[in-house]
Length: 443
Ligand SMILES: Nc1ccn([C@@H]2O[C@H](COP(=O)(O)OP(=O)(O)OP(=O)(O)O)[C@@H](O)[C@H]2O)c(=O)n1
Ligand SMILES: O=C(CO)[C@H](O)[C@H](O)COP(=O)(O)O
Image (cartoon, rainbow, N blue to C red; front, side):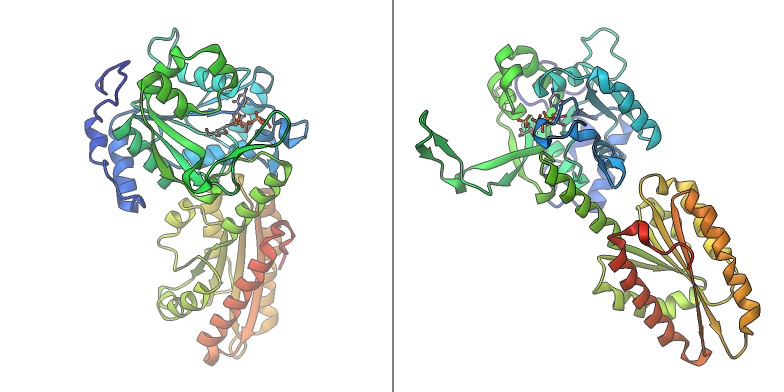
């Protein structure tokens, strides 16, 4: 294989397409991410990921293994898969699941339309599950369908909040050092108790770190280590970086991870994960105006007003809607000033539907209609706006929560009225997103 010495005990020379990434800034810029994506994409299977998902979740204390526990009605593992799938340069994702959960896993893949996934049978310990995942990528295994990657990421199925930047950091560091893993500062001091449960000694907390996931390895480094390691390691070991050190003599490069990398372990972690997901979804709102003119005049002022409330506000007259949907925005306010019909809202609904966005979470769409009371007879226009009820019923079947809002006001006060209403609306929406299902669907 062109990717460096097979079975070598030292770090292989990075392949030509990845070499350009060496020394990438820790906070890798969006442009370098896409460059990596594009470059890695040129050579199939440069990076693969193995996800151990064969545990029983004893510490969670519920009958369902934690990776299949629902968060906002979707299994935890589906969030982790989504986080990895978003990274286009990860070519294969190997998930290790127990035989008894194989059908459940296939059902999840189908229902949430996960891509690039291969399933292997889990082992009785985490290390054995990971080893099975690696074997699926190794060339020396019979019936190997996948191609051996240059770098393999190992990530727990129960750490759903992994971001592309940390994946890029560990992959880049693995390129250079042979192995790499995310770390976090310790929150408690580590102590060693004696046999009679008295303090034997304690470690100086500032000198130690918690080892988290993701980790990344040159494939040959970690596969060799697993092939050589003892049954004791496979049975009781908890650290892949340690195997790379002990058997392949590679000192892993440690990179600082984000606080959200923690592993869902106890029941309360499911509640924490749910809150993080809600917070993330509700922070992104897109306001769609029905004219370019309004986008320019009012959009800027609206964006400024909303920046204090939200992390991501986008005001558009529709030309970049496709891209906004691709970036997974789940909240839309469709502002109609020109007309009281639903062409624009319908266009948005069609795009949302085509994107399959609402398979993962409910999408909230509020269709706002500003009508000038001096020129438009209320009864006539109300009739049209009331049609929103029918639209809402249909949309709900596809997990799109549509509301309609009619604002009747004098044209001369248009700009300020519109900014005021849309802002109040979005603040209300944010307050209610905690209970997203309760958002009024019929306006
Ligand atoms: N035989 C095993 C055991 C664990 N894992 C996976 O390894 C990851 C991290 O392990 P851990 O948090 O310890 O999961 P569990 O073993 O399920 O939890 P517990 O220790 O509470 O039983 C999880 O994604 C888990 O599914 C695995 O693939 N195969
Ligand atoms: O800690 C780790 C870092 O190496 C691993 O992520 C792993 O989660 C350990 O899992 P376990 O709870 O099975 O020991």
